[in-house]
Length: 133
Image (cartoon, rainbow, N blue to C red; front, side, top):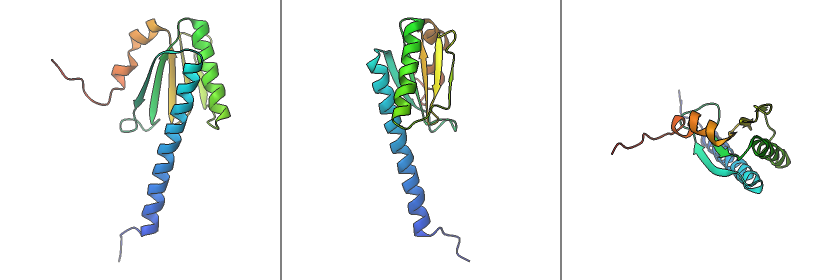
């Protein structure tokens, strides 16, 4: 009995993986441009594909006021929709200190600097340990 996968099966899996990586990169580009368009501060992209089964990447950005955070989130959601990435959910719009835009493979956190410093998502989602001096 032969338990080896057929060559066609292997290629289709590789193709699916490459397509997904391309979709993630395309989505990240759309998000990054949408954030820059409304002048987001300190944009950070984190690849979490090796430590999360929920998303492949996280984007963290800061806004200067609750109004700015809200307009950043609105622009990300609008530009993502135009590019074919439908937001699964948007949370935190009422207080607008921290708004999360869930695009499935990419999750976008837009925060006021005080919330960003307090929650320190960059440290939480870091994939490699920080070296100790």
